[in-house]
Length: 358
Image 1: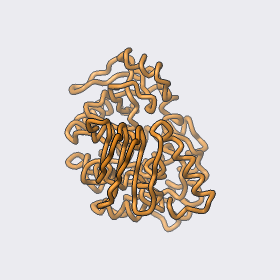
Image 2: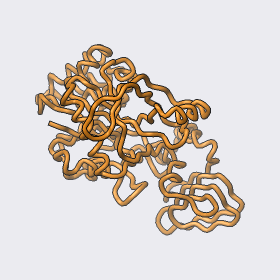
Image 3: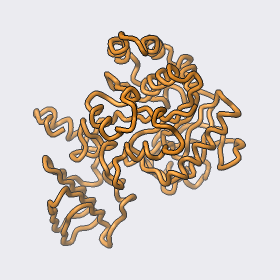
Image 4: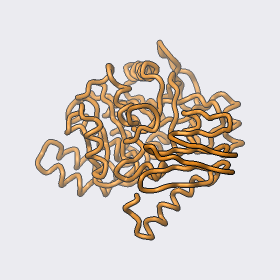
């Protein structure tokens, strides 16, 4: 049976000050009326029952996640006691799925991506399911055709085509890290590269077997947790064993080492929403190249991303290529070319004892 696994443990730094530890971007409505995690869940409606939808999050975000996804069973909200990247996250979810369904197939998705439309997304899932039916030990992932030379996404190089009745699928030749602009441009021109959007489909037994092969130390801890599922000792075992798992992504742990991998050409539009500048792609720009969300009046202002909250008015004079974000607690003003320094700013806030703003 098909299950949805939503990975929702983000730290909430890239969209500070709007996002915080307790309310990272997946719990915000950055695009559309619903929050990002609600959109992710709704995307599966009609394809996957609520009883088979699972979320992996952390203690700080568990309450808000349960409130936003009130249609899910409480036992389907899995709470990590420590942040250990995506491989332990996937393994923990797979263990719970198998405890409920020995034939479980996992559709693994980040909680904070923008995808259009639901119908196109489900069409892509149908292609992946078709591959799994013919080759049960396959690890399948989705690749998005790039439309600009992104330096912020990882890439998948495709090889030979695989047969699916609808859509396109290929064997995977290799993975590429986030490239510089010249290399990204060469990938775009080659026409054989996809963006790796971090959405996967495989049997729960297949991914656990792969992790047991490539990351036996990780699986020693997951197996102990698995044995405790459904017992009174589960929470104690989880809190003891999960933090001991190596912190490693599912890409490094398995996908870049396994041979039984296929990439489905995504029939949907996709965006990672990795930074404030991503809002320019999704909300568009005015005649001065500004992306405005909320109330703003500007003179000689161009190339800016401006977001206000409530009825607060932001005014600018002679500002170019900046990010300006207002919230009731804090205001961010940053050079667009130096947006990555938000991480440094977060460290400085912690150092100065201003954690209440995080």
